[in-house]
Image 1: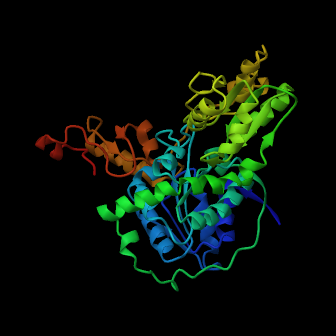
Image 2 (image 1 turned 135 degrees about the vertical axis):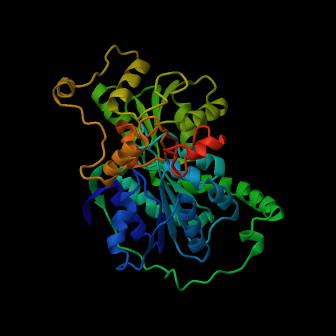
Image 3 (image 1 turned 90 degrees about the vertical axis):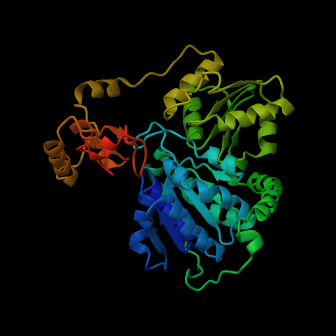
Length: 432
């Protein structure tokens, strides 16, 4: 059955289809709609939903469920994974029992975030699999697969949707929800050598994790998002390797350029060794298209040393693809044209340029009627404009235009300039 779904709703559908029993989260765009989509049907599907006090707690609750055999998911945005990094890294050592999927939504271009970071780096760091969907359908299918893969490997699996996937809408094939284990009916089986991360246990579990790396590659080798995405157009020695949504940009760009270019789309990390090796053996020049960090590019560089040392690799490290911001078909098209030596470049459509000139700017602002407006106005009246106002991140940070936000780094208690000075503690405007 097909449903017209937001990317995040498609992920929620995948969670239900996989039979998860516990879903935890700390809200943050672009990930918030996943739990918001699940909450109205949680009772119907006997699903425990929790807005946790932070991402670390969210992951720890999901871990507890997993260790009793219940499938669980912890949902957060990319910067939330920083908060959850402590349990996340050690979880790779202890492993899981019930499938556990960590959904970390990246935000290229900082649409609603304080930085751009690539969650695939965390998967590299933790030595666990990462799935990189290109559209809402893949997001749903990868979510279901992630739970199965997690239980097969007894490892957490990272799902990395980006803003354009999370907030896109598309027709999605949805399946029936599986019968799941009730979160309250499972028992925890004691096994201190595995579940207690003492140094002696951790050393042994690290070896277990490293021994699983070949099993990870074998499992991902047959993943449909790699196996069926090799497209050869014509007899050419020029290729493009792209990951996630960048693969769609590349396909559209090549179609518009009407050029013969081989394409390999990658949806998993680590990428499949055999497929990538076979691809790079048959090309003399390859362009790597991916958003944010050159994760795939670095992999291809290593693979080329063994399989095609003369291969010319273009990408972020050569300046052909920007390392910051989000990509689009225009950027992909210009990079591919440059690789092929074509003089054609694709500019912004004239209609968009004209619209930018006609439409008034609409910068982010506090909502009409927002109670923060009155609170900040009162603070200015009481403390004056000379006070220093620290803040954490959130919609209320938009009060920077009201002159009542002076510092902001992240969620939680914020940096206070000169707080070592005892006089500072008595200064008007000091905020916790």
